[in-house]
Structure formats: C-alpha cells, structure tokens
Image (cartoon, rainbow, N blue to C red; front, side, top):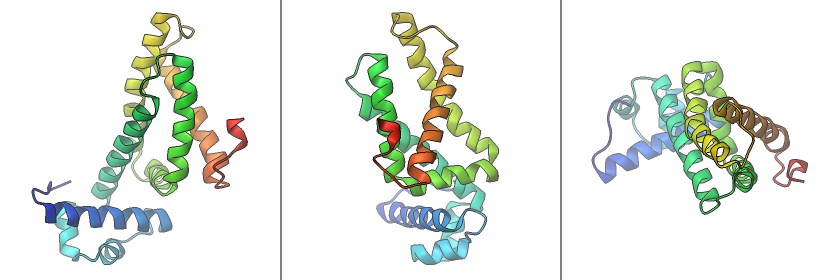
Length: 181
C-alpha cells in the first residue's frame, strides 16, 4: 500500500475501496475485476485508488494481509481460555469452519491469490503456521500430543481443515456439515 490514511475521512475512503474490491473480486475473480468496477462500486474517483495502491496486485496483497490478520484474530479469540491442545484443536477447527462459512467471499479471494500471486499465498499459510507450530511444540513438550515436526504437523492440520471447509462449506454452502459429526 502506498499511503496509510491519517484522517477518519482517509480511512473511510480506503475502506470503501477495500470493501468494494472484496465484493467485485469475490463475484468476478481477480483477473476479471477491473479497477474501474472497484472504484465505481466504492463511489470514489479512479485517481483515489492510485493514491492508495500502485495497481491491482498491490490491492490483492493488502486484502490477503487483512484476511490473514482477521482469521488469526478470530481463531485466537475462539480458543482463548482453553488449555488442552486436543480441545484447542477441536474448537479451532469449529471456529475455522464458522469463519469460512461467514466469510466465504474472503476465502474465495484467498484462493484467487494462489494463481495470481503465489508468494503472497505462501506467505499467508507460512504466517498461519508460525504461531501454530509454536503452540503445537509447546503441547508436545507438555506431553499433550505426540512428538512430531511441529511445522509439518501445522500444515497437515491446516490442509485437513482447508479441504473439509472447501468440500462442506464452499462447495455446498452448508454450515451444518457432516464434517462436524
């Protein structure tokens, strides 16, 4: 992002662009979404887009950073107060499925990043894995779970959650999936 707003009006303008971009990209896909459509939907000038972003790729990077931050925050809050890794994993999976269900449009944008900016897509999962791996290692050291490479285990568990979410939420739009039973 080229410029970080310093006023309420600037923040509002940026949020209009971000929210419009989320809607347009989720509906049309990243490659089919145009800056003209985004600014028109946001009700802002074309030039204002370029005040904040050099191009659509820079916008995608900001969207993925926000998605990542929002998801991590939600999962952290959802598992706060739990002190047993097995319970944390169960609650974390449920929270992840809830987040995906209520944010399918954001998840679609994340999927778009895989084919449009592989480094950004990898960053997202590595960022998720960093803290997850640390927490898994702590649980291993306490004897709560079997010892294994914590980074590998974090990616295994994220992969399982990701594909279950795709199958039962994104592909069928079902909140009460059989995956929960």
